Length: 471
Image (cartoon, rainbow, N blue to C red; front, side):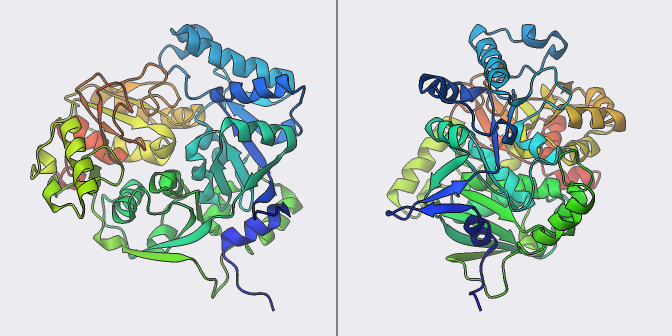
């Protein structure tokens, strides 16, 4: 009888072609996603006289530089000539190699890590690569998905394989029921605050526990999305009935008898009883409150009802120095109640929190209220935008004073002109808050969609639970 295996080990073993002398394994790649940053890899292919080996297993989308304003103008809506060239290069390169490209005018355009799952391209048991660090998002459906560099992307496109060192395994269980007002974003920020931004370095995380299982697919996508912010190679959630219900009927999901065979195979993926992980961490889900970052790293997060930490309480000199630098950049004083921090702007969207469930949560807070600071929302995909408009969510956002924009990475990567001015604070549903992430000199506070909406209507970081209670 074979030894019990983790879900990750099952997927890894199924994709190993050969193991090298140094222990690295050559893996088969099932899906490869690309965006505008792929031009380096395409240039390297051309220089070597190579073609994309399996173009039908590569999918491209314009998202990082996609304009969210005046989208009806197409490429003319991109004011910067370098950004326009990046988008046009992607169009030309994909056409040359016969790759499906979801361009600016495509009805399925969106952020790559949003459209992959919603089109059914992401499926349990697959190995997925993309030249973007937040590829870990796709692990929410039980796929092994990770970001790669441009030289690796060249190899994947030329051979449909990649060399990798096998990571260790980390099981993070979140047990118990989440309280009202607490979302998947709060869960993952609490996890990163607990283990740190290097806490999962060299590991693939399997998220487990009753709180994780109770999350919708959108919530699981949010959690897996930020695995990289804890230093992980990837993050996975075991597929279950919620996964199958989500995938059923999606365009690229198996159909008919193929569907039945696929589900039977997927049901064998979850970790075996007795499977051993290299590390395990357990959190009490019932103890998690709405979270907000105060510093310049996702690990610098505290509950909304807490105060800004004091560097003098840091465990070591290096940590103290980092905290002091973060407080200088964020212009915050130790001991300041988080709810007293004024906010200048709010942004809702991204591959972390730009799905329909996220927009519904924010709209619920905004309904019947007016914002007091500039704010905008950029749905995670054109399909999400259409669905939100069909549900009337756009009218709620616009009635509250939000700008309702087109789909794209927008104010997360801040590469398309959607930036926060220097010195201003933004309550953002994005995934990173390092110095200048949303624009030179900008200050980012990571929050959930509901918390971003609460900040927009009060002009400060606010416990959304108070607004939910009518206070």
